[in-house]
Length: 367
Image 1 (cartoon, one colour):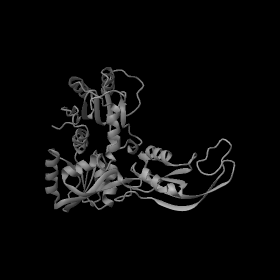
Image 2 (spheres, one colour; image 1 turned 60 degrees about the vertical axis):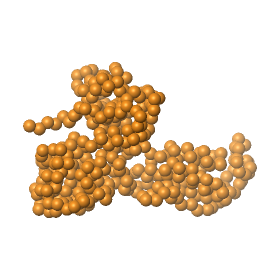
Image 3 (tube, rainbow, N blue to C red; image 1 turned 90 degrees about the horizontal axis):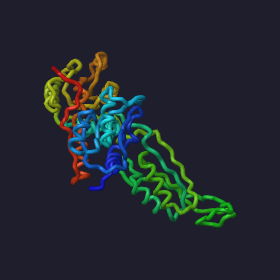
Image 4 (cartoon, rainbow, N blue to C red; image 1 turned 90 degrees about the vertical axis):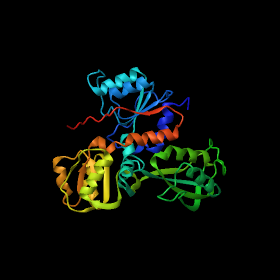
């Protein structure tokens, strides 16, 4: 761990919550710094505001892992006239790298909403908005006798997993034809001649962030000089990647009881909510951060209550007397993210200097 680089930390986090699944509007990833820099220590925060940069400087730590990206939109002038620019200038001057997980962690099965469900006590969880376009399929053609070796190597990358099953593939046999030109060096058959070869057509699905590893395994294992293959993106919904979660509460309780329980768990004095319906709370949907877009989906899955934040006045009408909408506050809905990041990083790098910020970066105050 002594020579750990920013890239080492990023690679681990990218395995945990791949940046490929961050939303298009987002700016998750390495925002400031050189990925090849050696890391002196890691500071974990929700927002990398100037006070947090100062905290890192005082600790002697040069990598900040934040949930929200400090830089969200393009900037044309880098002068210290706002908190964003001041943070970036201060980080650059002190050679501090800033990495943001944001919607990559929102969309992770083991991310923001998983942690919120865990803290509240929601079990048997499922993704509220499963994502499309995250699954790809490799099709390649290979001499039949080399099929198993190829599949074994590709499975090692994590490809071929479908739900609760691993090493999934589909193959069928046929005859491939080819004719190498005078510059070819065929491993099977002869150049300048038509060749027929008994081959297998192998099909394996994989998550799109694994594509580089899958192609490396293919090229390192396939015996042909030129490899025939194709990759297609599938429209299947991915039940393991996406925004929000829903599940069952351990024991049913009244809405008033649950609201009291929720405030205690989230350590808040009050929450905003739609009209009480007099229902028992059993099925619960959550979406950390701004989640008004999830109201209809929460109703669709049969949730008794939808916990999120940043609901506007007219959003509360969308409850349609079908469920109870609860706005707990933006920061409050994501507050357990820092602890999640700390836990996984200290487990991965147990002998390294890692600290949670002591600064509450929530900009919203209540009187």
